Length: 164
Image 1 (cartoon, rainbow, N blue to C red):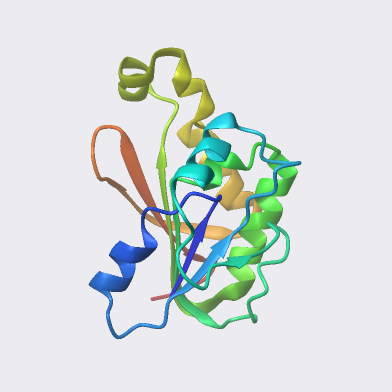
Image 2 (image 1 turned 90 degrees about the vertical axis):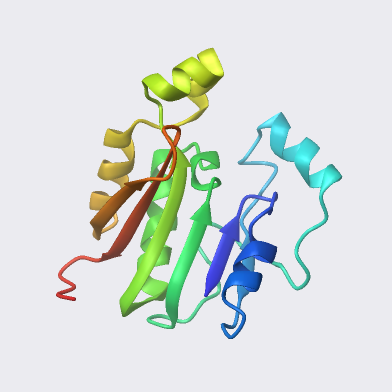
């Protein structure tokens, strides 16, 4: 299993507790020259990284091709503000996932519930159509979307053409 964050990781401890037998690799793609949100800088100061977290680049996750069963990107992919960088990142996820593996993208959406909760802050999130275009452009298949709350969606992806 791989958990990928943007410099603020509240989920690796939870994943490790839930999947005790799994090997967990934690990657941090935060690059202050590209990912310039002030909130990330504050969070990085307040919370130490998960032990063993590896610093990577969005275009080079340092994972072998077809080597990972499950990849989690929880509330962090929206920090990749540049569309081409985002597609490159999702292509890197696709390369790393095994043919029968799955990618879990958990994100707020730029939609009415998040507008009601965050007001203009909802502009920091992407619309569902933007995520679907990113997945499509990276050659990933949306297997399922699950609304975890009215505010958060879980997109479960696999490689295009996967016939599970």
